[in-house]
Image (cartoon, rainbow, N blue to C red):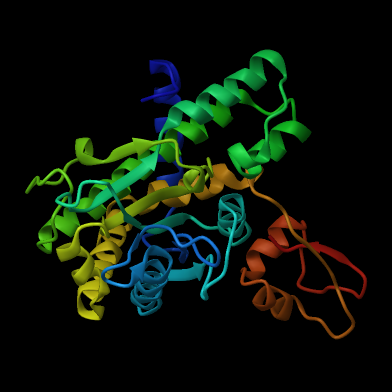
Length: 326
């Protein structure tokens, strides 16, 4: 564990057990946001000889990955972009947060000056940057930029009395779950005969790479970034252009995420409950003719959630009533 003492690790483990006892397999749909890297004026990596660029390939692959999740009733899928659109890295995180995502998968294509380099890498956020920034705030009451810590940064500025133990427990747990999901993704990639960057034939947790990537900065969402290969390698670049290759690769990523959820779904649902105090809230003013069911459907949440959030005993709502819907 990165952030917690042995005692704290024991406590958070107990919390996972507690929530697991009350969680049913796929009791709730798992919400996934897929991020197609780059876009618009940001072309990303390119190979002029092959006449391809990263922003085009990532969008093609992200759409294919979306289809696999859409075919699985256990997932609800969102996209950060579905067209050639420029997005700031912080906005990609905000989209995932707004969708109350449990999982975030960012798709990229790698590059290097060495044209013989090839293979796939899977990254998780390095915990050091978030840990250091949060600790700096706790020690000095420094202002944390929301760009650096996603919505948790905004929460810290407005809730200086926030339970620091819960905060670090959340950060630590998300990091650990991200590593598990990244490992399952690597295992699926290797199982389907795709090459890893380090040329290993075996996937394990120590093969997962850690880096301070801003697009993975959300401290309350299980997140991975998949570098699908090197565009600067002509052989790999040609494969990445092929729809059949993209389909097989994205199916491998989907199966990796699914395998993670199958094995660790209780942890994921527990994190959703722990994440609740840190999540951005959204409100809706009831209009004439609205029903609670219609409002729930409009915001893609359950009637039960709305009743719990607003302490409603009955399902009756009234015009101009303010309801929390996220």
